[in-house]
Image (cartoon, rainbow over all chains, first blue to last red; front, side):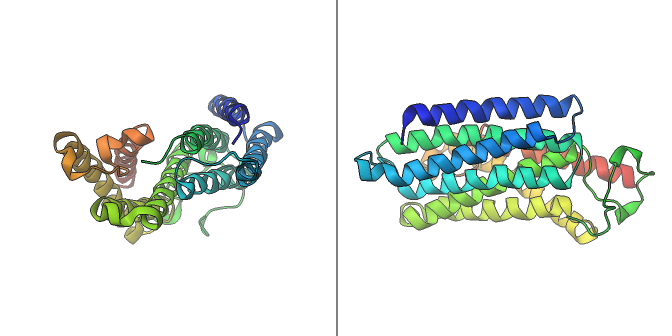
Length: 122
Length: 151
């Protein structure tokens, strides 16, 4: 994996998450901005997935447990998609908070992916 | 989510709740459901990983992980679905999580030998930002509040 890309994704997901949580708490319903931010996070995760699949071919091998890594990325991919779906169905401020919580969870999971990728499995 | 729920729902504007006709969860409680959902996903993901990859290393810990995952999924569903049975399931599963995180948390601290491999509840869920400790407490509080409202 590409370290700078991973951290960029984590930071964007973290900021998107904070934005949605704050906007939700001040009473905003899900909007193009907030749902779009989750869509962006989803897109970046797809980029991450592609990078992870291609990386070993360029000599950038995973050092940790590949099963664990892919479990993380698959779960992470489900979260923003489910959050956007939720935001479309349930048009309340709390949906915006939920979309934000989802992106924050993704931020943590992306950092965890980097750790798995770069740490030799015990 | 719930067939009895009106399509265009405005929880704050709805008339006073009547028994099980209204969704059990509305407003801020939905955030609780969402976080439960994420934890259920995380617990399932971890459990599947452990069972596929290294079940032989620690069958007890990993069986517990799988059990915890199932319980989180049940609890998530039970918070959403209405009806007396599901309310009971919500109490049982969330109560089980509360007891689980406290017992396994204490054991993992005082007798680490017993749990050399992490479970979702080891060290009170520190691997998950203590979410597994906080969540059942909030869940029980929520159920308790609901019960008060109903009575």
